[in-house]
Structures are given as structure tokens and as C-alpha cells.
Length: 159
Image 1 (cartoon, rainbow, N blue to C red):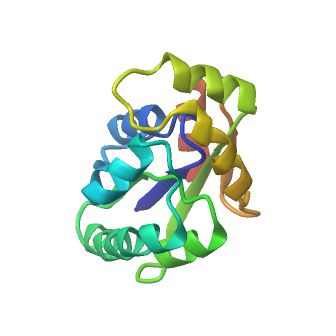
Image 2 (image 1 turned 120 degrees about the vertical axis):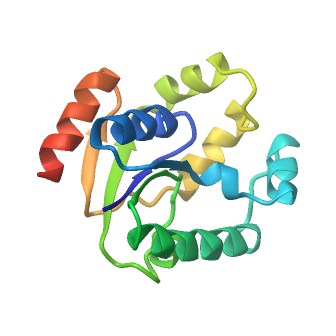
């Protein structure tokens, strides 16, 4: 089983994906770990990535998802903001379960500002919301709920 937990930075992708992994026994991965250094450096300078920056990263993830599908699967935390990004991610393996974490810009901004050691700053949040194309498929989750409730909701919808 391949599950991609998506949404803008600060919506809880890492928390929810890692806890979902623990609950289901499916390995957890963070798409951020697959970014080349040039992308991380660019975001750290406060610049948004463009599609040219993202394309090699998305293609690598698509190949990796295909590998996971033949093993123990994967729960991937990945922004996947645009439909064309999701199309690339699912280009090699179609049976992806999408989980979209949604919340208000104010709540997400508070979460980002409370973080330490993350390259995404709150100024880039506007560009993420601008790029976000909400999927009309998958499991949609309101992030104002507790992580435990969110996990239980997702697991119940996986059955």
C-alpha cells in the first residue's frame, strides 16, 4: 500500500505520516529527504522552488514509489501541491491513496513559526497556498483535530 499525505508546509504531514506508519506498520518516508541540496539551499534563502527545480525530485520520487510498491509499501509525507505534481508521482504506480491535510493559513503559519530547524519559513506559505490545487479525490482531513483523531479517521477510511 502506498499512501501519500499531502498539503502545504506546516499542515502536519510529517507528524501524521510517521504516526500513520507506526499504526499501520507501513514504512514512513519524507519527500523532503529526497530534495537535492540545491533545492534545500534555495528554500533556505526564502525563494520558492519552480517547476524546473521540482521535476527531477518528483521523477525520483515516482521511481522510488514504484520500488516501495513491490516491497512493504510506504507512507510518504509530500507537499504534492499541484495536480501535475501528483500526476508525476503516480506516473509509475497508479494505486496511490492520497490523504490531503487542510487547515487555515493562520493556524499553519503559527505552526511554522513555532518550528525550529526546518528550512521552510512562514513567508513562503503564501506561495504554497497560491500553488495549492486541492484534489477532488482522496481522503480530506481537517488538521484542527488531534493527531490521534486524524490517524483514527484515516485508518478507518483505509479499510
